[in-house]
Amino acid sequence: MGKKFWGIIIAVMLMIVGTACSNQTNKTVTKSNAQHDKSTYYQDLSKSDRGNLDFTFKAVEDDSTSSTDTNYIVDMTMKNKNTKDIKLDLSKFFMLNPYDKDTKVTSSKKQTITLKSGQKKTVKQIFENVPKDVIDGQGAYYYLNKNYRLAYIYNSTNNKGAVSNNLNDSTAKKFNKKQAEKDNEPSTTDESTTDTSTTTDNGRQQSNTQNSSASNNIINTSRQAIGLFKHMYAMGARGDIVADPVSGGFYVHTTEGSDMSATIYYDGSVSYSNGDQDSYDQVSGTTYNATNPDGASYDPDNY
Image 1 (cartoon, rainbow, N blue to C red):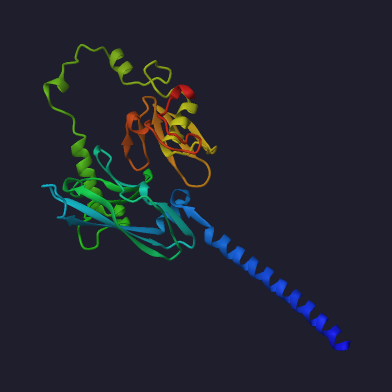
Image 2 (spheres, helix red, strand yellow; image 1 turned 135 degrees about the horizontal axis):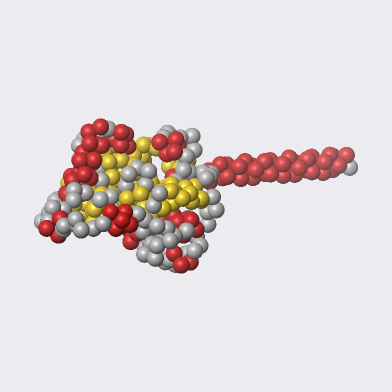
């Protein structure tokens, strides 16, 4: 009888210990999974954290294409020097000369990746069939939109490739500035030198001044400016965006999280803090955001 009693006691104790160990294991796994899933999208990082993610773009001539023109492929290497994991949508990378929209080259990849703290990763052929004039010309590599410029295209074919810190390189900056000034030189044709000497001072002043209530304006209110800003960046659900009136339009910016801003003019054109500009046609096209999953062009009458 005594042996049977003690056998029952030992069995109950073993069951209790086993259950406790199982619960502790489940807690550890849950905690581990929670830590594993905690990562931040690149566009939601602070400016300083974005600066701790290094990019290198290396262009290599591709002789396998059937085109008679020289084309290139571009490999991208990233190194995360932050203490947090970072998510990136590889389809959101693009190359662009902001002064020539025809030079835009989009990513060949579609997946989303997570770059762990301290991790270095290379994405092969993120850009394919890149024309030689794009590789040799003015422009930069971007992520998501022109607010996130990663590196100038300048010197992408050298041994080290184009690295993030070339945005501060005096030679690269001078090259891009020179090209931009050349692209923006005024035409000297007869059409552009039409005699306007008969125009009155009052007429000249009127033609050079934008009025927010003018019938030919697209953006007339701060709500319309905020609406276009949300459309541009595909973030219709955000409520931390404000628009401050400035000369010729509105200065629109976020007040929480990542620092994003742009000046939106009455004619719908946009200028960015890095000096780049977009026309209304470029920023008002179809996009995708949480409040508009089907994508639609921006309509100021909705605001």
